[in-house]
Image (cartoon, rainbow, N blue to C red; front, side):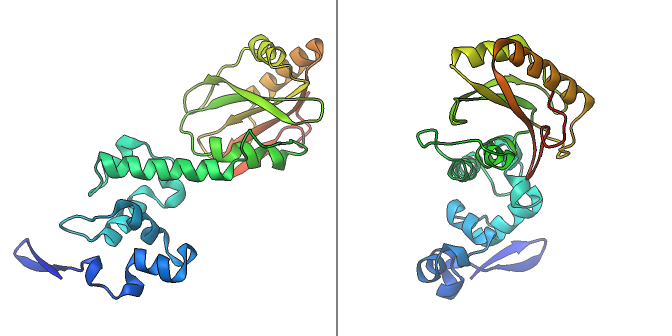
Length: 238
């Protein structure tokens, strides 16, 4: 155990290697499996070292607390993480890489056959990709006649409250990708999944553009964190 001088007080810092094996994150994972570790312990394994003031487990707890929890941390950028005491660019990059791997794991690979038969299918694929974005992004997903995903295109990136989409360009991309039908998606960084009047009007314009060109707009999904809304389910598609 290290003893540090701080404000004329001797503050003990419990070093992880001095803890019982079942309290050390790496040993605990090896002995009992990764599912037995807390979020802070898993994060500690990624960070490897703490600071002079805190061991790596306490440093990890501090990051999670300062970020507002695991879900909130997933929305942080490099500069945000580097503002947390004990986190430099190397550790911040490590955290961001791990979070991105988690998102990709939750999404099916395009190399597999991904079918969109329901709003749940659409969110299962695109939710992890879009729910932590801090700017509003509009995506058009292209499907063949069997409703199999054959590709998607990010049409625009806006601010935190709005994005602009050109219906003619969206349909041009659909035709270029030989799409039989499309699903529209965009995210609400605010966390409120409710469709705005602007969302409804844009959906109707895209629906009409697709109808004229023989490209069916199957749905418009709004992603808001871990929630989503299907405009088809709400009767707001066309």
